[in-house]
Amino acid sequence: MDIWKYDFSDSSILLAVEGSCGGTSLGIQMARQAIIEGNRVLWAAPELPDSTRFSQIFSDVDLSASSRFHAMNLVGNFDQAIDTIIHTANTLPGVSLVILDDFSPNSGRVPKDVTSGVNKLIKSSNWTTLLITKGGVSMGEESLTARGKSEIKSDEVWLLTRPDSGSKRTLSVSNQKVNLVLKEEGFFQ
Image 1 (cartoon, one colour):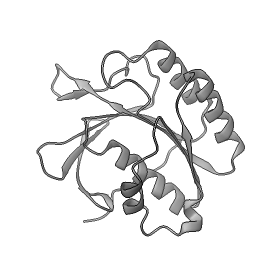
Image 2 (cartoon, helix red, strand yellow):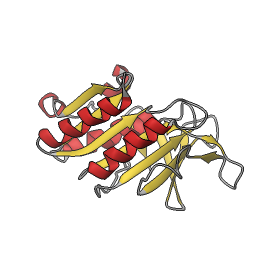
Image 3 (spheres, one colour):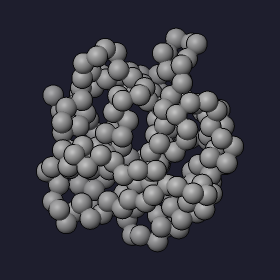
């Protein structure tokens, strides 16, 4: 089993997740990969990632390299927060990944100011943007849908689901399903 890796392409990804199935862990793992490749990561969320989970996934990353992980608090006026993220991402050298985790309410429609701010971030980016949010119940063939996918102008929509109560996960990317296993060190395939 190998650790799952993403081919960075400066695209924008809307990642819809089932509750407690590892969306933040997937973001941390992508951040780890970007940092190991010599780049910087900007993480914005209402709360910092769980420190235990972060240290598990970053366990083999040199402490000085970990300093290229920049966390920002995503609270208050959303539009101002997005402007700060854009400014910071353009000011810091070598930013290859910007992650917005838990950027919208857990249920219901994504508010228009959030959609507008996220679209502004996507339009301004020359890095990979990962937007992590709770998904909604689907009436289609998938069990999960990405809330806001028709309003958010992302390049890709990913779905992360848990097929059973164990450590197996399914990542749906561009109509392909990737079977993953979530371990302490991250996702493996």
